[in-house]
Length: 435
Image (cartoon, rainbow, N blue to C red; front, top):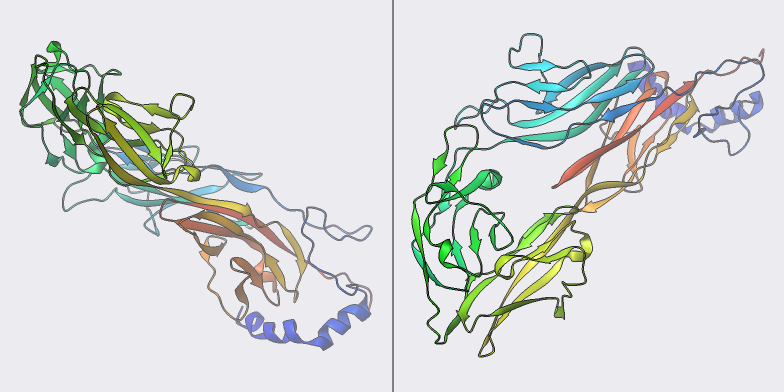
């Protein structure tokens, strides 16, 4: 190997060598590495073909709770059955002696009885599936984050309040973000039925709109995340008869700036109260939103705005405007939309001869702008005199040697995701012309 590496610079820069190749008839002027499944071939010769080797399923980011079981999916295809291994935080897992983590027949990772405490978090982390075919090469999957919901902590709890009939009320219950999906509500110690008039915001806060006498009672929120449920303080909501006099218009809940990923839903809360009853309308970047004619915009209870299947075009400044005929108030919030890495150009399979220079192309997009790294047969490619990153993300390999054969993958990553795309390099044998 050292001898091969040491000879590279001479092989890749020597015009004498190139002239010899031309004289021997190996290459015509301007010849380049072949980038298809049809290699340069002379009659009667036998040349290896590219071997399909790729992931059918890759692991995805997963949220779990203590004591539950988790499956991180992975399946790879090759003509010969691949050997599947797993890495956690960059280190191979020894599944043979692990009584809680098992390799399933399809290559997926099964974690039994997830462990998570303040000082012991052995299961939370970043997982990667590694597939190997002997004498062919290795490929690695995207990296998946396993998050284990922590112990419930209430950032805010419901407080006693009153509301005039027909108006809206807010009952706070905000917990650590990873537990928000596990929040539910009770009224008078019975499960609360949510509908179009009574909703739970993504944060866990309860919105009661167009309040009626039947909404009165004792409210508490419950966090159930695998262990014993944790209850918030209990608070009474009183529904008062309409006083038939005016009251000041005020926000009970204002929108706050939000970051969402393409394809997710975004909820911008906005709830106001006053007499006469206020109406809510929304604007984006100072243009009125036509919610009724939109398939992705919905006005929820109290006037909250839900945007489904978010796109990058949805980013901007949103204004919630409450008006009751006597006065108008408004609040605003910024919606930032991020996008995971996506390949605009993926590396393609290459045939080449020793001593040639090749380039694997890779072009990605995403928001924030993704970083890109390359791996060969599962190992990081470190830029050097022979491996160079050119034209932003392309990988150039100078002065090929036989050991450069294998599978190369471009791995793109940003704050909201990562992705991989790969290709195979085959080094052809020089033909013997009898010289």
